[in-house]
Length: 155
Ligand SMILES: [Zn+2]
Image 1 (tube, protein in one colour):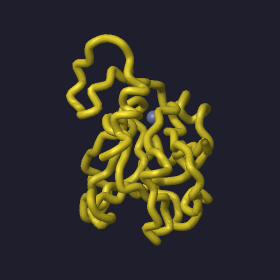
Image 2: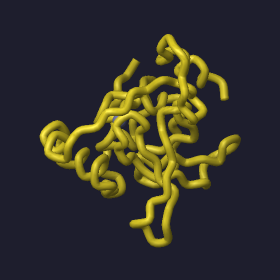
Image 3: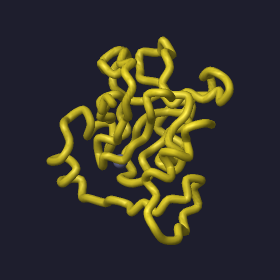
Image 4: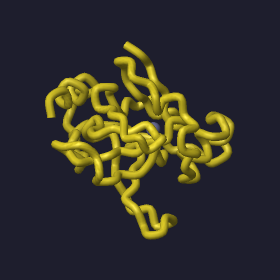
């Protein structure tokens, strides 16, 4: 779990947080109408973030991105992953075995058959991918992400 606290505290704002999630950050939620989201986002990011779509396997250049840096939500620029959390899952999607605590929220994707555990950005509510428990130890987690919904900034 090394490294989490650095990011959490780096984003922490002064004041008391009443949030229930583990990051204990005071992240103000962003809400826009569907029309605004459609105008703000490129087509692929809109389909993923706002409609829960999944990009085609191997379609994102971020799948094979291995530079140091950070991955941000394309909807609201909240940092979601550090490159140190990324691993080669061979799945064809950018995959992470950890995330920035408090910046993603899991939910049940009932549109999948069978229903799958999915996750969204806590700030804008944008769908990012599915959490599958076939990742490497110690977490066993694979945060299977859509690269078109992420913005990578190399450090
Ligand atoms: Zn977001």
